[in-house]
Image (cartoon, rainbow, N blue to C red; front, side):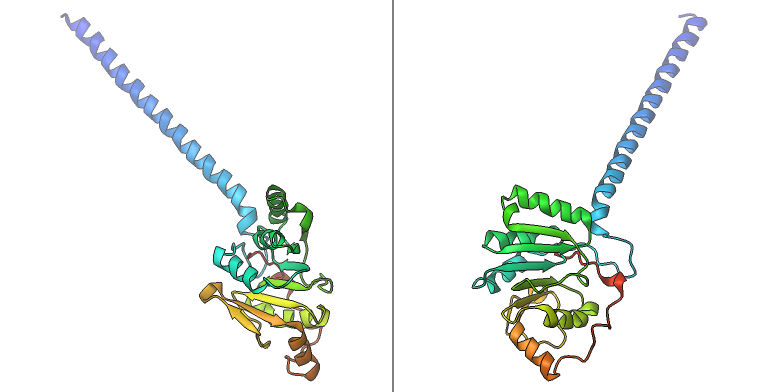
Length: 233
């Protein structure tokens, strides 16, 4: 083989190696783009659910566990009528209650979760016995509900005590999940650990309010509006 042929063969080999490197580089860029795009898409979909809004106190969406849902339904098994879930999240408590015969409603500030809950209720076939509202709990009235479920946080439970005691009918029951009310005495509990639920009778806490046993607060002592979002069930 002549020197010229050797040079041509060397050039061809070098060209093939260079082309392979370019091909690998293009594949790497494509793979990086796909992974990066997937992460961006996932964030875009998940962000509205896990971060309801920009507030001083962020209360992100934390789904209720299967045990928590079961405990709520168990303590309300002898009850009927209307039910409201304060901070209804993805609607699982409301949908489960509707399947048990309640006319169930959910209050939730995050519109993405409200729309998703409506879709889930339709898919589960209980859309006629459920309703979901984009609502601030401090501006809502609870006078029409005979059963209330709340997945609250400690910093708002004392103000909620007064609001519910002032608005609920005397026949109502309140079920608190994860955190109990600070001054009310529960009539029963169900579950353990983070799955514990506390059941309160309206007659008892309204009697305590009228007798002065409940913490002395006025309706003007409203909580910071930045803490009003509840997206935990």
